[in-house]
Length: 460
Ligand code: UDX
Image (tube, rainbow, N blue to C red; front, top):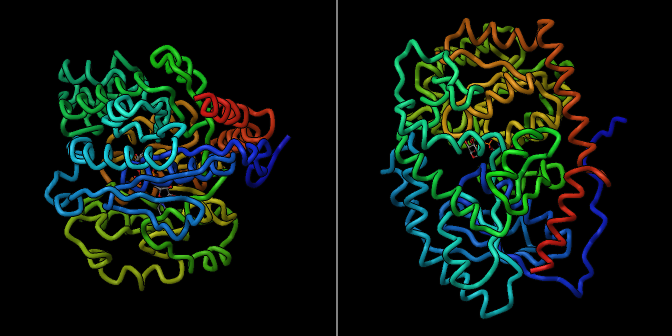
């Protein structure tokens, strides 16, 4: 059976009389804000009242969510973020986990004076929130915004760091890591430039996930069955795989950057499955040289492309000033470059044939749900792990060689768009797309897991 389109409206709405409040707290980054707001919408549709606590930095747009209450906590992150090392997320996550403690505790305590709260749902990256929840005696459920496979792999990072695997000799780059053979040494190198900081972050996060009352995952059981078994052993608390969240509510309203919608009419003029869509998400960066190779590589394919160039994706540049000379004239109507796109709509458009992505978890799920094969260029943190799953486990994408080089880019895109290999990839991802849809309808795994989550929260 094939089921197209969005998941049907959820049907087991909790009676209004039992409405209880949930407080949610997201990390202030696009890839975390999107799933948290989607989850809030899902729970609201189940009859819960929603309070979103958020930092001033990257505040969501309140007017898009008139049915929620918002509480902002002060942070001076905007002032210092430009001084923090961009390539070391563990550093700014550590910073946030210390600077948010007092304002968050005061905010939550204030909320409790107004009304009882069934539970706190906090981003797993905010590991400090467990101590606050314990102190204020409310259950804390965690939202982990990455894949199950990523969390399993993160589990071995502290050992890999101790063994010095983050700094292997170049000749070992293509060798599998004995402790986690799916990964190669070159993947470990990419995860973080600060192995000690990363290990410390992972240890803190995992310890406080284990101490929580449960974990919500933006994934579905059929996609990550074997990783789920490991998760049940490593995190012996209730685990809820209710995703993909965006199938219930899209991420467009939680976008921090304005989405350029003019490209949809351009896509309408393109042949089915002919367009290469390129986006490296909200935080990944590339060098000036890589940027120019991307431009040449795309133009050389001769295929239509839609390229998201996020301002700041190349350090020190405003936007398009580093493009090769006369690039836009050369590609003419064949190529479109925008600052930010309505990504889910682009992926769902019949003209989109391939997604060249940084392998962020939201982007990967969105691509799977629309059956769009991927070219993967992971940058850091969870992305090299997710890319391995895409290319070597699910076999629904191809990894681009590390050096962004125009010929390699052209060949890899053509492998996916034009070769027999691409057709096989297409068949496999289409099969996954059908599994996603089945998981979300009545009786499906995500549907049932959401029902369990609602019952669980009501039991607090
Ligand atoms: C970050 C990390 O990089 C990622 O690895 C982790 O899994 C989540 O946090 P990000 O880099 O932003 O996220 O990537 P991703 O998880 O793919 O999220 C990007 C979101 O922005 C997606 O929901 C996507 O639909 C949206 N987006 C992206 C747009 O709306 N428009 C765009 O042009 C590009």
